[in-house]
Picture 1 (tube, rainbow, N blue to C red):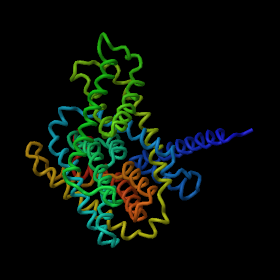
Picture 2: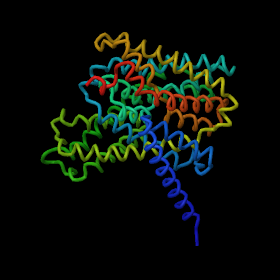
Picture 3: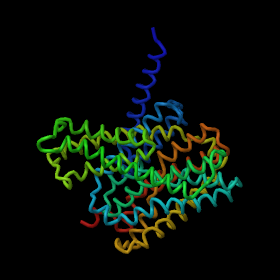
Length: 411
């Protein structure tokens, strides 16, 4: 006799089997077409969700939220693990400008476009822009695992995608508070929230990441060495959880914890004999998480909603991609005299700014709260996800070759 619990278990198992099966097929097709797998995962999700109606998981469901949070944390941790501190120090100024003033530039430019296109109030126009203002590590990091580009460009864009989530989220919640009448917009309060959220995440990531990697990598006290990969995944999830519980940036915490793990040698800890094991494990677990995240995101794209606002949303996202992003990159890269960015490098960074998990989560949250103009916000968000992933992510390799960023061509 089947019980409600049995039905839930069957539903979850069927959902995972559908996603993984379609993900493997999409991954195979993407390798044949030489396209990033995240783009094909989105298409597979749209087919299974909007086409066949085999996946009907809502964005607000516990299953969906768990997959988004855990998957993003693991992918972000792995991105941090593959960045070298010496390289990050060289591009730190640009990353900082992209992650803070860059997000504000994007909010201002895209918010203006949304106000003019949809005719909604300025506050809600800026709120919609803040939702899509941050780039997405769960989209960008996997693409750069498949497309090998110049290291400093990769490290800049990946680090930006980790750091600007804090800025985007803080601006969104500040505007949401003003829109719902719960608080007033205050520059000093906004700056204070950002510093607490971002720096708090960095401190937690450093402290917890170092603690666990010390227990794994120390030549005498490495009591967790036999469980290296388990400790690695535990660090990624726990760093996010601790940050979130302490009301700071959990994504910042897990990214920084990944940085500590990836640079263990800098702190006198030796994980070289575990490198192959960790890489093999992380490659497989991040592929699974990409499948789960992006097939689900694709299944939730509301085509009827997009049909109602399609041309306004299309123009708004075009402004995001073709005006706001170039302005952001130029304003952030040109002042960095130390990095001496070339026009080709800046051009490539202008093109790479995928939207995905975090904006989708924020949009779903606003819709669940019944915020005014949530349909407009959702339409712009869905269009941004579809265009930036299906168009920009799919053409990253081509753009890298055209601009001379592809390392394979430099050999």
